[in-house]
Picture 1 (spheres, rainbow, N blue to C red):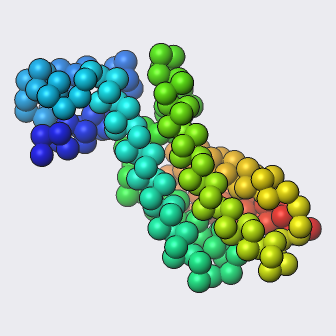
Picture 2 (cartoon, one colour; picture 1 turned 90 degrees about the vertical axis):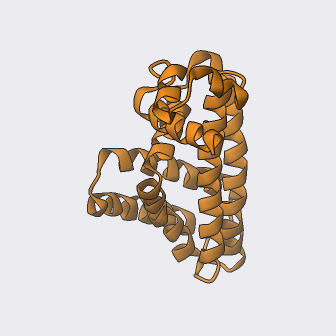
Length: 193
């Protein structure tokens, strides 16, 4: 129980104040333990941070995989669009995890850059497999013209990344959805023309 509390508080503080702005003593105080208690579960601040970061990335991957499973009954266009649209739900349900991942993928502490890149690449591989199944299905069914699957996957993942930024700029779901719909329509036209 204490380990989970530590992780929850650490995620909140790391996402709000950053790695450098969060002291282990602050995390311990908010949990209601002394700082040395943290070392019963984590080697150091870096270990706690990376545990929280990896779990945030994994929660997003699990969410996308679940969406993928739900979207399989829809057509390819609706499936891909649905993944993007439901991404908003993840941000709403997991604001601290979303902010943590976005902050540190874009601006990792220098000494953690390689470790964070490794965690991101692992996540990217999982997302690539999820998106690939829809792209391949679209090509096989003739909805998407026969072209580089890698190109289409990379473009879609970049669209997802860009929409992540849009979420943090536009708190109105209506504005976010409008931007999502316009961007997806351009992606779909490029994939199908």
